Image (tube, rainbow, N blue to C red; front, side, top):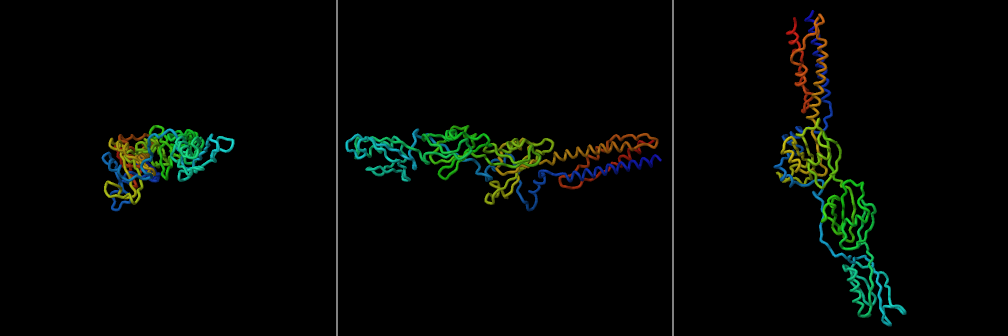
Length: 431
C-alpha cells in the first residue's frame, strides 16, 4: 500500500513539473525579442550570399574606417574665417546717395537764384556702381567709403564750380544690409554700420537666438553658397565671429541630424546630435546607457546604409550598401574603439538585450520550478501520514539549470523530468 501511494504521488508530481515547465518554455518562446540578436547578425557574414556586411570595430580598424564615406551629411559643417576690414562702411549697388552742393559764386550753374545750395534728388547706385551728376556725368562710387565718394564728387565738380563743396549722406540699400530671416527674437533687415560688423552683432540686434531652439545652428547664405556652424561653437571661438557683408542672409535653425536607438537601451527613440560629431560612447551616454538587467555589452550594433557609389572593395570602403558594425564593450579594446568610432546621421544603434532577457527568464523559471517542487513535496507522504524526506540534491535546481526558457536559435528546450531522481530518493529513504 505504501509503495502504491508513493508511486502515484511521484507520478503526479512529475507530471505537474513537466506541465509547468512546458508552459513556461512555450511562454518564453513567445516573448517579444526586442533588438536583433548579436550572434544571429554576426552569423550573416558566414553565409554563402550575405544580405549585408558585418564589420567588427576595434582600435586597429579605426584609422581605416575613418576613411570610409560619410553618410547622412557632408561630414562636418562648413564655416570660414576672415581678417579685419576697415571700420567704415562702403557704398554698394542699391545704396541711395543724398547729395547737397554748396556754392557761393555769383551766377553759379549749381545754385539757384538767391541761394547758396542745391539739393540733388536722391540717386541710387546702379548695377555698374555709378551715379549720374548734372554737368559732370557718370561717377563711379561703388566700393568707396562715404568720405572718399564725397571727395571724388567734389573733385569732378571743380571744373564747373571751383569753390563748390559737397555734402553727402548714404542710405544703405539691400546690398549694404543683411537679412535675418528667423530663429531670433526680431527678424528683419539690419543695416551695416561698418565693414567690421560681426555676425554676433547682427544676431544681437535682431533680438538674439530664441531660447526654445534645440541645439541651434547658425546658417549664413552668401553668393550662392551656404555656411553652417553650431551656435555653441560660434560663441566659443572668437575667430568664428566673421564679418558679414551686404546681401547676406542669416537664419537660425535646429540641428536636425539624428540617429535611432533600439533594444535594451535606456531609451528607445529618435535622438538628435548634441554636437557636430558624436562617438558611439557619447551616443550611448546620450541615450541613457545600457540597461543593466537586459543589455548585452558584447552585442552593441550600429546599422548604416551606404550609397551604391560608396562601395569599395577592401578596407577603403564598404563592400555592401548595408553594413552592421559590431562593438564589444566588455573589453578595453572595445571601449576605446567606441570612443573613437563616430556615428553618422541616420544610423541605428541596436543594444542586444537577449542575454539579459534570457537571464531574467531563467530566474523566473527557476522560481516557478522551486514553488512546484515545494508543492509536490507536500503530497509525498507515507501511508501513515509521515512526510518522506527531501532529497539532498534539489531536483528543481538541476532541472531549471538544464532547461533554459528558450534558445537563441529558436529551438525548443529539452525537458528533463526529475521523476526518476525523486523515485531513487524515496526508495532509499523508505523503511
